[in-house]
Length: 112
Length: 113
Image (cartoon, each protein chain N blue to C red):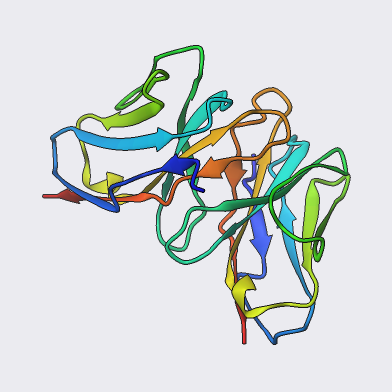
């Protein structure tokens, strides 16, 4: 039973436009949500997080939105740049010693 | 400030053997977690160590075990290797304040034949 789902295996966006990556979850006990970016042959790199008590968090070009009633979060990247091409993982945790629960990832491709 | 490092980069083992993977956490981080990432999947939580004690575990059998040392290094040990253990093994560290923000190493690619 997948508790964190990323339903789009891949997404292609033109350079300069907005990239929107989506994530759904089923466990209402999750307290924190995170986005990671992964390049080939590297470990995941932390991008941005949001607590369940907030509905938006912004860091430069990256904004994460959380809709608790829909159990849905999204990552917006504006404007998209070629270096943003990577696999993006959504993750969630209840905190404490629970570890992170990851989705399967979305491969974002930024077209010139 | 150094990041998280892992060794070796790649490893090939035979079914039934035992393997030890190593990780050096980011300086000052007292929590280390290990994850298994199979091909085409997201990382899956194996266990977490805090101040040298295991304090959290995912859905992995006891043949997956670990150690954490005072010098910010840690080990993942897997006994009686199975073919399905072939995966990328990731180590992640975090500090006590924002423990959920974990910083990952590059991983060790384990192949079991």
